[in-house]
Length: 437
Image (cartoon, rainbow, N blue to C red):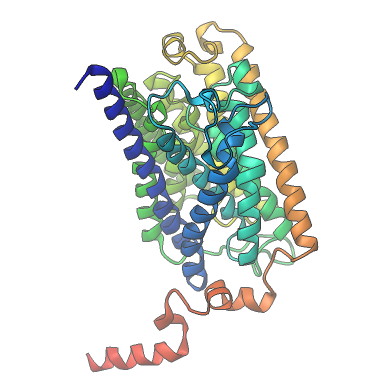
């Protein structure tokens, strides 16, 4: 086999493996979110991950990939619908990757699916199933691809040199802002707040599920960040894996220590969210910062997002899995961090943007990063609000109070995730079986 053929085969195999790892993150989200919510909604919360990825797969194939990476203008792509490649220049924005367009699509689809999964966090335990179909489709066509094009598809932020290697803004901030808008329009869950506006704890039903989900997501991130090299040449993916892991470890430690300091308990859920927040933050910076800076970025994200999750809840925001803090605040921290920490040697390797402020690069890159965050935030918030507000005024966003109290498992799907615990028909049989044994 010729060297060029071998390189093509190795790169293709690596991108396929990375795509599978990112797609498998859906299992992590299913366990994390189901474990972090109540038993009566567990089947619904887990099952919607399959629905979410199915919706994003079809919508991204039909329109989303073309809008993100297709030939077009500085705002959105206008060619390549249904993955049609009418000319060699249709997907030039991805020409740097030496793999077939089918694998480029599969890898980028996995990212779109993650962003949509994040958005659903703000809808948990009270949104209608029909909303997932409609908003999921429109998010994957009108929201996610536009920011993707701005940053990764040759759009105006790419032309300015915005540094977002694997999607702290493109993937995580987008999903988080949509989750925030959904949370605000849906309102809090029944019983979350008292008459005096103080919050009540609504603990998840299975902390072990949440921990296992976190571990799966941590592993999946080795497809997310290192996979974004989309090639094996120079083995740069190994360096990206190193910074990714260091940040996650720092986030776990910083978050559990912050929880101990602020609330007097080494909270397990805080540690889980600290890992995820750190991974979200390093997603933009993993290819641009030195290992010591990765530790700093991860620790700051883990600590800050624990504080923001407590703060937002006290201010009346019922974000069941803290999607906006973990993916939004951490996404902002990670995106802005390269404006401070981007190393000259790594900027040279990636060929994107300029060195950060702490390396003598001045305020230019920091300004670009802040502008990118603001632009993405405003666009996603505005379009998500318009879509969800129209849905609220037409079909409605929220299930009835009776359905919410009984749980979405039974009201939307006709069966409980834990029938032997929640359904009287099976509970009696379970007790009889236990007695017999």
